[in-house]
Length: 64
Image 1: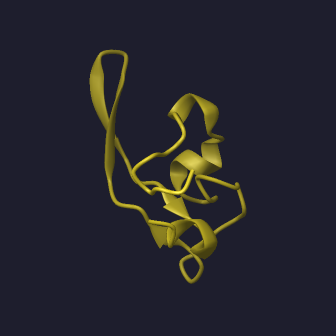
Image 2 (image 1 turned 180 degrees about the vertical axis):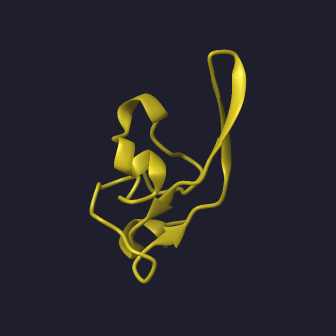
């Protein structure tokens, strides 16, 4: 995946990736100094919209 718009489905991500504690692409641990915010996203769970805030490491966050 090379586009920040094309993220893995939530069902394929770990809890840490969904929370933004790990890179949404490679799973490496993130902190506020290393994380790249990918912007808020909306998905649907149980028929209701749910907003989530994925983050990535610098290597994957800069790929646009």
